[in-house]
Length: 168
Image (cartoon, rainbow, N blue to C red; front, side, top):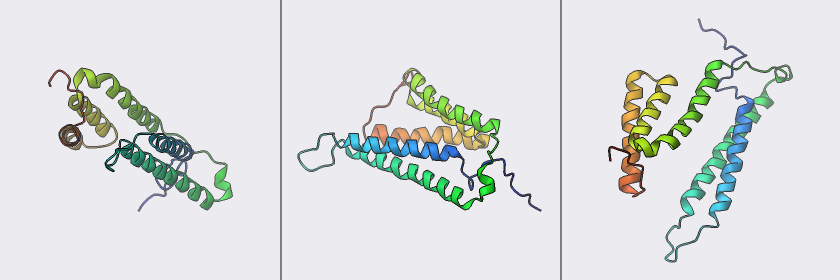
């Protein structure tokens, strides 16, 4: 017999106000990226210029930011008036996980030149995968395979230099 979900805990079906704020911020940032990328120079031979990739990424940020906002609005409109005054409790683990994701960005910025791309990403992905609920073997596999795939695509295929670190 299944239990009814706890109304005090936010779930995927019940987005919190963070989805509204975050979605709006991401959409505005994406729009700014698109506008900024339009000022990049164009190539003479008609090939895509340096503004193509930032424009695509900015457009995706706008799209997915608006998805979050629309999702939040539709859930709020469907919910009853009695629910509008309630405020869900925040689980401590949610805040720890959010802090860990933000700390991972700082970790990469500080350590990528010291340890190199591969090792920095491996540690980062292992810790995040394991903390966010992945099994130990899945976290280890993610930590090995994802940096290797990123390295192959960016360093070898697209010729984008990545930090090498002490191991070359």
